[in-house]
Length: 330
Image (cartoon, rainbow, N blue to C red):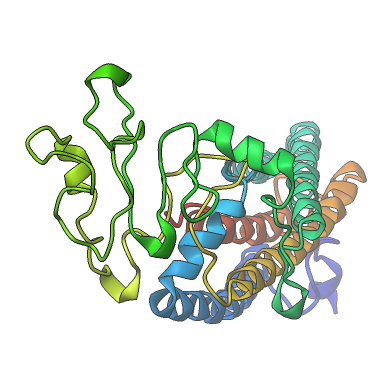
């Protein structure tokens, strides 16, 4: 009994030394973190399987994620890892005033991260970019205003309609060229030629369009009748997407692939689960912050700060993987 009565207040009665208590706590935390890694590993495997079988879904859908917000959150969490590590070091040195400041900054970074995610989630909800049967994306090309905006951006809006940038698609999918260079001289144009420089292709033939003298025909107009390239790896056609011209902050693919909701289901599941871990980490940080302000820690005992720091670093590490896998697919 005399041995136990000499123990400091922070030392558990079932430990002989503070070092033994610290090692036991660290081992328990690392085992818990291993289970967390297994949890996210299953989701990463699901991501890998769906992306390998449906690359067109991920290439299409990731363009609706805001890379700037994702990069901002990445920077916020990396900075919070630095402040958390410094808080652990200051706790080991017994500088509690510094610990309070650094933990407060880390907590504010957590709130900043959740605030950015709220903005992202709100935009996805508003535009119907959700999971499963809740996936009902808005269409932007129905009204006259939408058509005008597409024309101004130089994007093809429908089969056979040419935009201001000179890109056109003929009915049936055959390409038709539009001269984007110097303006045509109307007096020098061959009889029967149009001011667009070429007529729609018929059957993919490489012959000169009707009404144009092959000797005087624009070679680009003739080459535009060549059939499109074959499909790329995993069945993804190379011409499945328009150039990355932005209209209303969204890319403009020619056609939306089926089952796009799979991507958003994975997105919300992985980022939502990560958000739950962020909230749990913030709660733990608030707890050790309160205890630090009460003077419970010193240079001899700061184990809880160390353990919470390990958990927060895992939260940061998971996001560092989520950001490129979801936001930087292309």
